[in-house]
Amino acid sequence: MGNDIPFAADQDVLVDANIFYAIGRPSNPQYRRFRSAIQNAGVICKLPQRVIGELGGANTDRVQAALNEGWATIIEAPSPTDGDAVAGSDIARRTIANETEQVEHEVEKTDAILAGLAIQYVRDRETTGVVVLTDDKPAKKGIEKAVRAQGYTDSIAVYGLADIIGDDPGDSMRLI
Image (cartoon, rainbow, N blue to C red; front, side):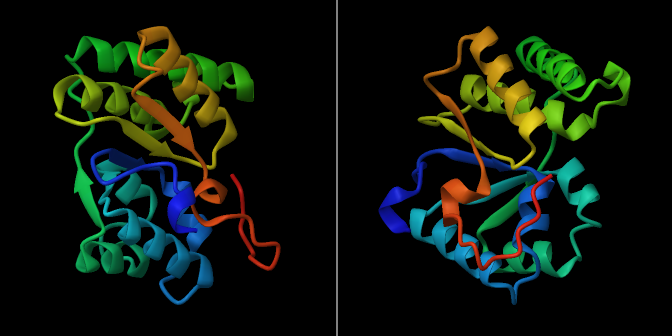
């Protein structure tokens, strides 16, 4: 895919657990294509600690391989005292709750935290932008709404796995 990848080495790439579920184990073709796309772009995927927990820990083969090969790293979630991050997470959580017809406090926390984390990264780090990778449609809507509401549309983008490795009908991807 090479030149079609929607991010560059000078951007932070935050990855949701569903991306790692979709690419499968290191032996899967989707995993290999994703790894190649990430390495060719020169980025390091940032996996929030909550994402690592959802994936079964840092010792699972898919996470361990990414960490060992240097194209992923584990990061912490935003501080609960960071106003912009908390506001972004709250907006995302409300949107996800509306999209899924869930009560707000039952919404998966990682999905909402990704919005806050993206906002915090743009505000507090020297980056040309942040990309959030998720295949969770309600989470994508929530993050995009939070980004718009907080005024970061020029510096934060949300993409899915197909945007990175294409949509091969022979793949057995499971979208969440």
